Length: 212
Image 1 (cartoon, helix red, strand yellow):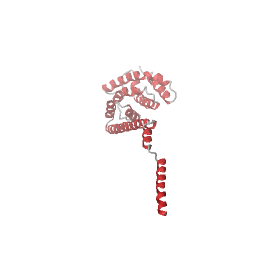
Image 2 (cartoon, rainbow, N blue to C red; image 1 turned 90 degrees about the horizontal axis):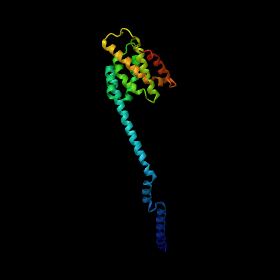
Image 3 (cartoon, helix red, strand yellow; image 1 turned 30 degrees about the vertical axis):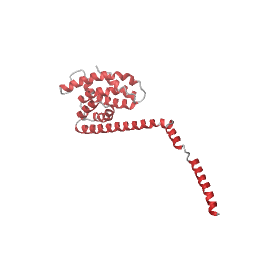
Image 4 (tube, rainbow, N blue to C red; image 1 turned 45 degrees about the vertical axis):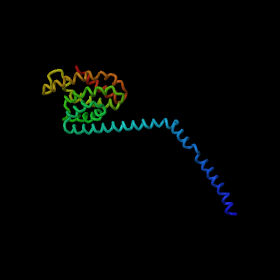
């Protein structure tokens, strides 16, 4: 009799188990998952895909920047004029801004390794940064201009006999003087900017206003 009772109760237990399974895992659960994947959550997954692409692009840019900076360092150690020629050739504003502080520091030394001719060649590219909306970029450029003006101010300010030895240097001096006059078209606007940028612009303007 016990076996018969077990035979009668077992199907009921099995049926109950199936019922509970159905409650926990509905038959149409796969369809619901599919519908959720096709819903708003799935749609916005495109955002993460685009974000990943942006990060890949940024990694590529930083890798390229680092590679160019390594080249710039090698050229700087070899010859400053080679570095300037490289900066002009690649036309990379970011690399130029990274290198300008080093060139500026050299101009402040008693025996700079950067010639007047190098500064003449570099000035047009530096001028293009003068309209930047970023103050740190403007400060880097103004520091460089200020160092150039102070370094060759005795030669730039004279209207008499050239103070430089060679004809090529004298020619570079005349070109630099003319470029500085044209360069400072944005000067009056920068002088009105509050803070460090405005103060530096006023200091440079006090020099350049004396050029004839």
